[in-house]
Length: 104
Image 1 (tube, one colour):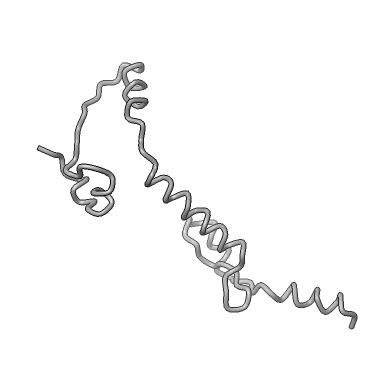
Image 2 (cartoon, rainbow, N blue to C red):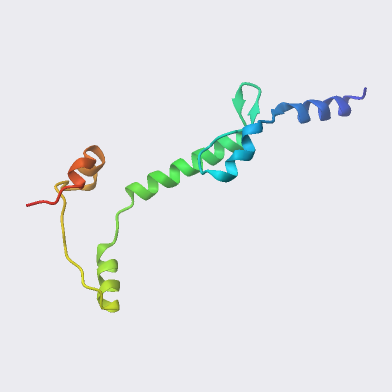
């Protein structure tokens, strides 16, 4: 067997197929991920890291309430200014229960 043929066989066998992978089309959960030896594939690890970074950005990026208020006014929709017991974003992230309660 030539050296190039040996490398091809190793490459094809490097990622273990998982029969659970086909269930992934029914859920957003990360199930049935491929394996490369004892580890996840690089593609799956990078996809998770990207999703995690996007989730952090979504949580940490401030909302422009002025833009939303202007759009509501322009569309003629009524709105109220309400505040929760969580006085800022950091408090809400640490105490989401306060974010579910209106302030006095």
